[in-house]
Length: 548
Image (cartoon, rainbow, N blue to C red):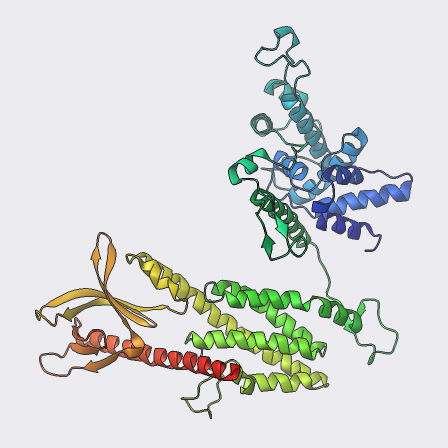
């Protein structure tokens, strides 16, 4: 941590949950003894406050957010309050100047005056009376404190905006908001009785530090929720605030190659390597978690792809073999996941027999993996650039395929909602919807043709009829055991025979074109599902043989 005001302010915002709110408020209100110290504390306050976004808030909303959700308690000393409010006025003005609906002021001095007026109004309306009566007895009329009325508040602010009056409607909204919902400048104790009563107060004991994963004994659920909320909110504010600031990219300096006097913006390669070696396992663990839940949440995996790409590229640039192999194995897991979904057929060695069973180790013999490894192990810069290009192209394809996967997942959910107990269909995360239509099924016993709605999924064919607004399932036939025969007789031009160990019957379409479409779609689905089942079973057998 350097002594610069910006770094100090960032430190205070990052660790505000561990600092007492009163102590932090007093520190932010410090003024310094001489000119340099005054400027130093002013910059700390400015950087701390400028990381908070007040965009889209009126002055009362911005002040309420500033005083209640930003990690500090407003100090009691008048001079410190003045300094804090001056900084708030500056940052609020920078965020909202020009928004005449929410910030109808001529300059930031008006923001300062209105903010002070709001604090005084909040204190006046909600201050506890010093003439407290005994319980059950009313306060005498002569001792009741008179509170500020709305007309008095409006009159006090006449001519406040550069000798001009503000909109009475704007000021009335501020008064009504403060009257109905006071700004809790002085927060109540952390052990809220409401949460303790609603969730039950229990004890918690972690086996490995404050954030251990193995919990022993009972859990203080209320305390845990408060801790999580208190930790996440400042991080969200910090990220949102930092997003508005420019952070230039820095060039990595290789001391082995650049022995000349370098420019100031170059960063030593050893420093970057040391930092990455200390942090890479956090990225690796996050990506692993997304991969473990990819079948349930493809969108989560899609969001982690960029992290994986940048991490893999960094290991290539810094010649980190162990870390590169770890992230490359995760890329293999992504490819393995995509192939077992039956949605990825490209970049597989054309010389490999179709019947070859592939597992996650078999990918290391694929051309794309070998090209990346060969280029990454080379010390030539052109070879590394080629490896980075290979990685970039690979991830572009993965992004495109995962977007398709997310679309299929949404469509699957929509179809499941139309079927009674359709949530059962979502239990298999690899399943996706293909086709729906009305077909007639010939009953084997009576010979009658009964019309059903057929739903074709990637691994199963379902037929159902509508009952009470939802479809009731009558039959469910897995595709990998199914066979379809076309019936070309004169009487059955629109029919085909479905053969399955569970049930076999004749299906009739409305016309020959519809029949041909169903035949092609079902046969293609059967082929994909048989290959997918073979891959999974082969991988299982290979894994079992490897374990033995």
